[in-house]
Length: 120
Length: 304
Image (cartoon, rainbow over all chains, first blue to last red; front, side, top):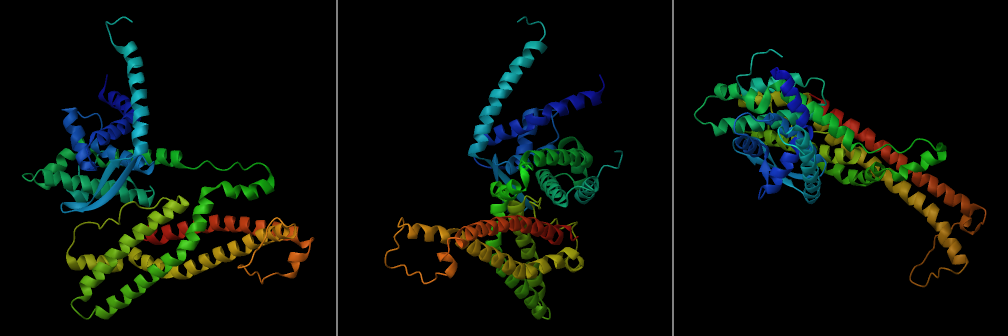
């Protein structure tokens, strides 16, 4: 198994998962977070090889925000360009609830076939 | 992509811009801003390391410019497909297509924009004229330079806000971040850059032009609505009054009663004419919304 096919598989998997993870992170956060904080939080959680590049979360944040699942606010910062802070909205929470259910269902289903040495 | 890994923020942003060649200019502006926000935060988080050292690790954390560019292109394509309002069905004859405009939210938004355009136009015009004339007047004094810089800075912020308004009304993709200031340069080089940047001048021209345009939009909207609605509803009121369903009691003096209100033959024609005028106005509003968005994008985004 060469590295590129593993990467491609990971990328295909990530399609909707990045959005699910981002919504969850913002749901668990007490207040609002900006892109870099979210990226670092994910990096810490990954402990080693991250599942996706941090650069790919920004466009997803934008698209979630454009879809009304997140609200955003721009604030000037001293260390560079203005920071964009994101916060989950009520529709975002509703969608997250649905997505969690779908994810749990999908995981159970996939596990049933892929977990070795376990009979069903 | 086998290129030298970028060793500085400016080099990274330059490569990212090249990777995004051909993409929507508004998207490029967003991507550059996100990348810069991340890179500067990353450098601030590692005070002991040099910029080059931090950038070396960027490809494995944030992603190389080509990976990041691909992520923006893909997400944009998906979002554009998901957010596009379904086109009203074209079938059903010309009459149905003519009235289908009432089910298009863009038409209402554009009509609202035509009213708003006058106020926005006055604000833009006054801002641009006062800013330019005071910049010129103060140019001989020492405070002329900071004044000019503040004026151009505010111009960009207002242009961004106007872009958001235009996107909300027409759906035309506009930048979500202010114009990227480009590589760090000396104070004078930056002023020179601002003066040479075609976008500075097209933005000011847009502000000045938005007053006459705003007057035209406002006039069309008010005239069309007043004429169309009164032609539609005046005959209905007249009929209701004649049959005694509606009693106009004292207090409301209706002096305006043209001869056609008394004619049974002209009343239905007036109603039809009124409906046609209002519907045409809706089409007109939708067209103006789109045309204005394209104009705004050309002046505010494409200029440079």
